[in-house]
Image (cartoon, rainbow, N blue to C red):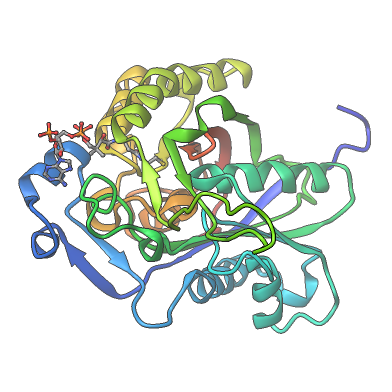
Length: 336
Ligand code: COA
């Protein structure tokens, strides 16, 4: 750490969900499944899905506005926008460019997307932290948003039961009081097992050359493979995060994990020895909202009074790539 190191304040967190609810019972109209099968294996009862032309950009805009309002930072005071999405509605312009435009920002601040799937928020936080710590940018908006429901094969009951749509946003700024809210952060990837979850872009070669293989644009997942890998690495990884931060499980107030599968969350909870009131879960109502799941879980649990502020939390996520990451953070009063 140099003398010029600028600490980071988490200034605001917001979220947004589409209104349309699809229950497990609704899914029985699409294929042979049951509420009991889905709930017992995943912890999911229902999910929110985009409808009509609504998409991740619309959801992301509302989440961004909510996070900015909480932060007290005006859109025109932002220095950078980072959007994190597993599969953006358009590859370009980036979601972040759309958000810049729809927030009415005319100062030409940089805006770009990162693809780290469900680890997107943590990846975005790490990138933003670097810019703030080094003094390059002061006020950064991260928007984590996904409408995976549009890329699911709705005849594939192994995959389409899991995902829901939603958006979360976080505003990070230089901490003028010198108090760092990101106590420790880490991100990881293992590209060699990337085939566990993938989504191809659909395209074709120039007609003058040999055609390429055909691909669909659906999300493909080896559910059992993902489960086995994550259940093996994540509990130990979270324990290692604490060790690197020089902290113990009992020093932290809450675990706010990516909501992909209740049994995976419970494996981490067990490892940390946390009671249920220390662990945020909302997968029952929203399924896996990808990059958005951690900020939705954080902001919604504060709104409901299940998480108190002026506390500390472990945020951790994993997703396609495979990617994973975690952050130990301070949750200040008023951030959501
Ligand atoms: N309803 C009823 N039966 C289903 C079903 C459904 N929705 N989905 C799969 N099945 C069937 C399969 O066809 C299979 O039947 P078979 O044994 O006759 O072939 C059987 O159930 C077991 O399938 P499998 O895919 O091995 O199930 P599973 O126990 O691994 O559970 C998941 C599937 C997806 C719920 C589970 O693997 C999981 O949650 N994985 C983690 C995925 C994840 O978190 N992804 C996101 C990462 S960010």
